[in-house]
Image (cartoon, rainbow over all chains, first blue to last red; front, side, top):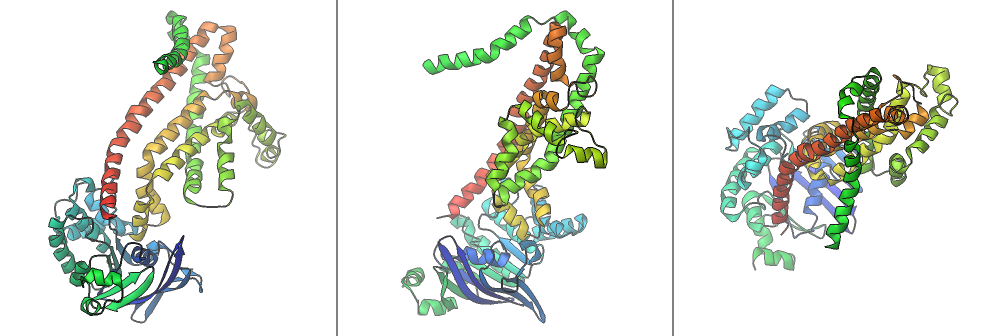
Length: 242
Length: 274
């Protein structure tokens, strides 16, 4: 599996211009300061923003699915793309139970209620929250909300998993534990994983490959060690602590 | 101090007419008037037409509010002004406009009659049309403002999970705007219940067919002022109950859990935005 993102997008005063290829089974971290365009890149992949020029294509063996191509006048809507998006503030539906949240994607895709329910219960178990399905999200701790959001994003078995600052909303004490759990789930996931972060430690622990973004452009990419060995800007230098 | 005095005068201004009305109320005749056949027919007509008008306002008003709040299209502010015009228009003017457009000789009314045999003026359907004309803007404004205040981030999340626009609207948007929708529907319904000017101009004043409660009240003032007092009391009681219920039952109850959730979402969001 391979996701090819060649995207040029202009939003107000900001522009994103990247050409990236993501391989299945690997986790890529998009690393960069605020306003570098990391979240915009995820939104483009999810279909919440359209590219002005370029192409977004998912290749599964011989099956090539064009998600966005303004030249060919192709633009798949978010619900037509096989994507799981975990937002940094989780965005759990407050009026639904935890179980309904996890089952939402399956129900939205027309899966029968009992099947969706059983799958969602299985996912709650996998993230260590069995028996909490009847609760409302408002009663969950930060770490629990994070795990529900992850289960909800993975429950539809997406080809592409997008994680926007998955640990940023957690306090330091829970972050280490949740990060270890997240690393385990990412190893078990075989699709394309793209992780947005501004924390180099997180990138090092969770990602196989790191792409540094600055002002909407790719500044540098490679493993975290390669980047630390030859930082390409003052920002990266400060980040890796040289 | 001055503010308190002025506010007290304002309250007195609203309270004194009620006191006057209740003071002259022929309490011994209340049951007799309310149980008369003419009043029964007017009441029944008012209840059915106003409920129908509220339902029709919802069916057409919610999509209109959604378009106004969420879809950018050229001339949106003109459309918004047009669809809320009847709120500020004297109702009689609305009735005249309806008469010359949907009346039997009206620009569109003549074809309704010719092609479908539909004659709106002086019919119960005409009453509903007049009520929808004045009531729907209340629903549109209320739902549009609820949609504008709604955080579209939840809808985005639902879309990425595979929800079509309609599914997301039903499962995520609609539950979130329910207080606004209920408030708008109740306001539209009570506006339809009290509608006078457009009804009498467009639909006339035929007992049993187009004579609603407000029309019956006005008529009674000339023939039997005591009956008019009783009818007014009934309308006041209904309106007052609606206002009280709207405050405490729907808006109050719905606000507490919703704002709590919103606060927790905002809290995490601001914690993240460092």
